[in-house]
Length: 82
Image 1: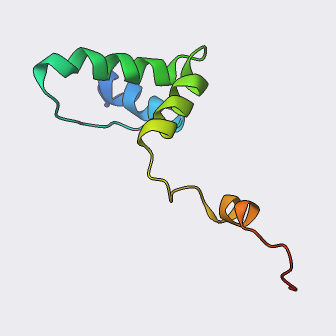
Image 2 (image 1 turned 120 degrees about the horizontal axis):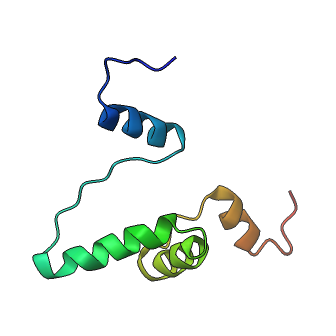
C-alpha cells in the first residue's frame, strides 16, 4: 500500500523509478534548453527511442564503451589457438 503521507510528486517519482527512469539534471545554455528537452522526449517516445538512442550513441558515445562481448566478437582471432 502506498504511503498516504507522501506528496503526489514523491509518489509519481517513486513510480517512475520503479519503471526504470532516473532524474537527470543538466545545465545548458538558454538557447539549447528546448533542444535538450526534445532529445529527452524522443528517448522516452516508443516510436523514436531506438532511432534516437542509436543516433546519439553513434555520434557521441565513447568508442571504447561497447563491452567485453562486443570487443571479443570484433577481435581478429584467426590463427590463435585457445
